[in-house]
Amino acid sequence: MPRRTESLSRERIVDAAVELLDAAGEGGLTFRALTDRLATGPGAIYWHVANKGELLAAATDAVVSPALAADPAGAPGDRLRAVALALFDAIDAHPWVAAQLASGPWQTTDPRLLESVGQQVRALGVPRGRWFTVASVLVQYIVGAAAQNAANARVVGPGGDRAAILGEMARGWEDLDPDAYPFTRAVAGQMRAHDDREQFLAGIDLALAGVAALHPPRS
Amino acid sequence: MPRRTESLSRERIVDAAVELLDAAGEGGLTFRALTDRLATGPGAIYWHVANKGELLAAATDAVVSPALAADPAGAPGDRLRAVALALFDAIDAHPWVAAQLASGPWQTTDPRLLESVGQQVRALGVPRGRWFTVASVLVQYIVGAAAQNAANARVVGPGGDRAAILGEMARGWEDLDPDAYPFTRAVAGQMRAHDDREQFLAGIDLALAGVAALHPPRS
DNA sequence: CAGCTCGCTGGAATGTCGTTCCAATCAAGC
DNA sequence: GCTTGATTGGAACGACATTCCAGCGAGCTG
Image (cartoon, rainbow over all chains, first blue to last red; front, side):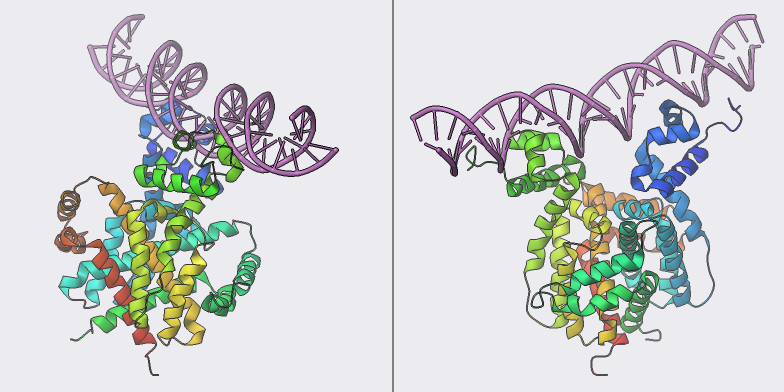
């Protein structure tokens, strides 16, 4: 069947797209770059893929799916943390996923995330009438926070010195107007020393504490 | 000074950009559309603005700044709700802002949001060492949730029938595999009937409950 | 008042992008 | 060996952001 050994296929195209996106960021996915890497023409790619949007969606799915596949064991809170961290790490490794996930509607990829989170919400004893609300809020925090962390990581860049850039930003905060920005000035030092992953987990813990407070386990 | 009455200015360009973005979405901001609307050429625009990115940032700032300007009175929790809702409504009215806010790093516009949120965090009695973490988590939820709501609103479109699309999506959820997606199937009905703004506020309340639980007011 | 200057303008031109079109190609079936 | 239909690769198109440059005109200089 294949015209050449290892001929084109949707899977090969998506793999190449992921590699290009990882190597050069969101702007790195070009049909020209794709044709070069696959040694073919645009027409061949368009035979397997409808357009660039579908290709981006497929690439996003290829990264997110494995991250959501694992179903860890343990207490509901720990399992929720594990699911959230898996997505966080996947986005951290492929920052371009963030823009896709945050800008895309609740489709294709999201039912799985909602399902994973929702099962833990149910296990936490949240009353049935609040399932959707609580699970949605958790999903929105997980995706939103991971996306913003990826955006911050993008300014640093692959080879950038994170500590230096954080220090620069902290100095900028300390130079703000003391009357207008007392809080920002006060936390500049904490910002300089913060860890993204730790902070993300603190957000999950905050949400879990809120769930426990609003819906006590043995009401 | 002005060559024509009402000559070009950075402000007039940014205003036109906001109108174009509101009218036609993120793809509506084109230098061609801008030159048509302002009856000029690209060169004139590039004299006032460095590039499209700076123009987008300026347009975003023009929308976000007024929303963050109001400083409501009341209890810390209520003030936090008011700040969050102001940003939520601004993004709801100008959905293209979401992509800019979520994809852009913590710059220019964000210190103001962090400051507004942070002052309420301080007023809530959070210990000083946790100020940055708690405020950051809140900002990430506010921006992330608002951005995802805007993305959902974009699929509906300006003239779309929200109820119809939600119903369609709910039916899709109900048709999922019962073994793999029990939770999603169970909440399909709640999804059909949910209100975005109400759900966003529920998230704020959840976070506030978490803050109160982890940092009791009179410890 | 004449001429110069320079901030500002608008149109033409460039290179890259996504996408479309089509002639050429190859494996499989008759 | 001929046809056929699924694939391929390259050429071409329109839209885009951006750059370049020749010119305008208000205000300064004399």
